[in-house]
Image (cartoon, rainbow, N blue to C red; front, top):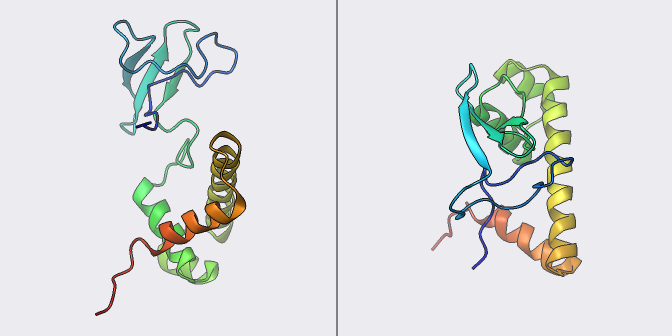
Length: 143
């Protein structure tokens, strides 16, 4: 069964000869841990191109000062139908900030859909069924 790549499994630098090559399971991996940032995020370094990157590179949490759980909770409340103005007042974030998080999450969702449709040959109906499954996953079934 295929597994998703984890942070530090490949070099995200497109100019690197080892870009996108999975390093997990190799006897001499190309990616090594290189300390942590001030906020405690793991930093990695590619031995081939010498570039460093963090475990949040390429995610909606990259270079964010707000904790991950706050961003996720805010996005979840938006998905439940809460208004941006209400969340701004309750959570203390600017409306522009919440809107930026929402736009970035939408871009990541679109990129995921593109990969699923292109690489795994899913059609639009299958993808809609997948999102419906994901959205309903947390609901309790009534008896």
